[in-house]
Length: 242
Ligand code: FPP
Image 1 (cartoon, helix red, strand yellow):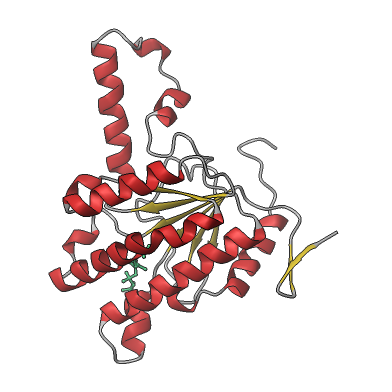
Image 2 (tube, helix red, strand yellow):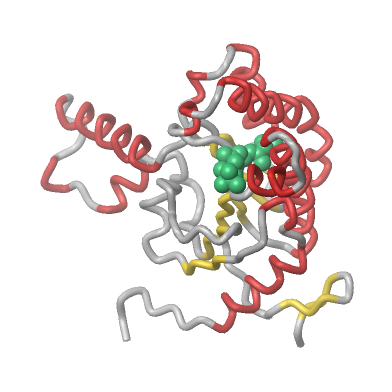
């Protein structure tokens, strides 16, 4: 029997991990003659709506690209505004704990102020055993940076004799990524009409299905996510086989 939520029909097959690239905030604001930062404020509201919806319908793992290693190139006002939104969200994160959602921040946290970094670590520790859903937020994250860091860790272990270079497998690399405990991305969603992966979870997206939409992120509502879920359920995933 097909699942249903808020009178919206849901497919029987769900992706285990949905990755979201929250794109289009700036254009959304520009269309309304508002500063780009206003688009991020609205984008953060959409993020919260989508998190709650995914939790309600029973998605196992969701991840969001909130701030990339490249986003530092934006104006200092815009960088400050995005970091401030993250800060506000982190301060309120305990509201979500009742939902038994595990929260994980991936990326190089060292670039953030000490109090914010500590709050992220505290939240990760306090939610470690929650198993209804995992919410991954990528902050100062870059896929190449992540793989480079994994290579460094593996090389150090090889130097100490803890790893034999000839025994390094794909699983060895995966075990040294931020996402080692979580499933690979099954469905990657990018709104706003851009058709790129932009350095997001590039290892973990090796066999992801992509869903692109022209809707700008602040307008990305659960109805649009349902379209993506139905399309995903209809795809034939072969992982290189026939
Ligand atoms: C991309 O849109 C969006 C970002 C770089 C920032 C996303 C951040 C948030 C939604 C807020 C903070 C997040 C949380 C988790 C509270 P863009 O600005 O590149 O859009 P454009 O392509 O239209 O310019």
